Image (tube, rainbow, N blue to C red; front, side, top):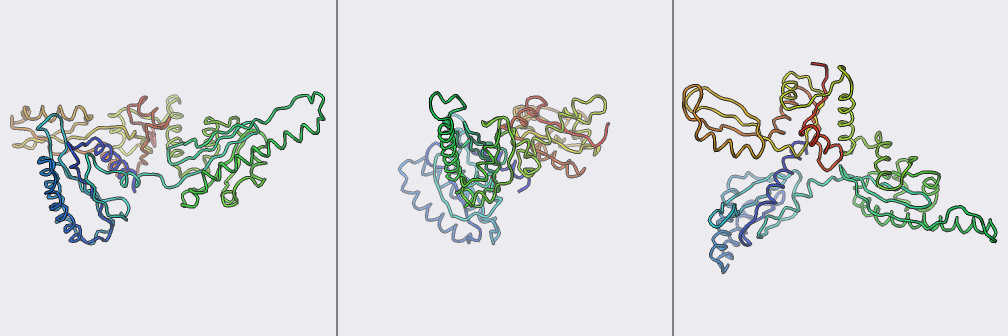
Length: 416
């Protein structure tokens, strides 16, 4: 799935989550790849008959209307359904009583649907659709020294701390009457038992992910030699041991240590989304602090001009950038203009246009087209061979672009 399709689906899911029905009258329909449309239509007609038994008159009417809307959409589909299709339909609450509106969404899934699902609820059933957006590949991280350990998972842009363990292994101190050699053996035994515990917890967390073929590798780090003892000893399950990619000398064993390890492991993890984001944003910031020779660019107007000139090498865009490119045209003459507006301004503009006159001939104006701004930016990037890097606000780098640069930043090919 392309970056922009990924973003578009995320945005749609976010919007669908806000849709609520008065009762259990919003229908979610997942049709698997290869399922015959006639069979689905027959099932829906049976559900239509069953809906006649619903006690609430308004719910009964709304469910039947939603089913009818889906049946009409099915007539427009062509067989075979290579990936299947997802349809959401229902009377959505817009505000107070009397503000309900029938809404129907037909979505081509990014991957084939395997299970037929028909569900009626007060909200749309989105979990199967959300699963398509989950990052499939993950890397395990184990940070360990004699005092503590952290087990984490790096999945796409997310760092998930799975387990934190402390050892209770005593540090070096004077024997105080006991044999120093005996005390040393006790400390070594405690350290051995701790590493066994770390290996057991790591196996519990990582082996199921490996068996699902979603774990690409394991990175092990920490201060001192304990990490090497852990890797070389029989502490980790043999299947997990086979996918250990490397060990790293670190200063920390908590979450900061995970971030430190990711920095050092960057060459190994170039395909991970988190690393792609970090690399692009850090490159932009390095260019930004240079003097006149810097190739950093930011600001909506400046970036659009540079894109149209073909001068942008890499464009970094926050996925939280909710803007639209709006085309306004006159109904009578050839007058047209374009505006970039955010989500809040869009509604205001739509109301203003109804009462505005064409500055050229005085005729009525209409909004001829509106396009998601990020989709428009992707089109410009494709025309000029610019690399587009969408960033999430959930990461430190993504938050920097959103808050510090209003959601857009670029790296130029040459100074303009």
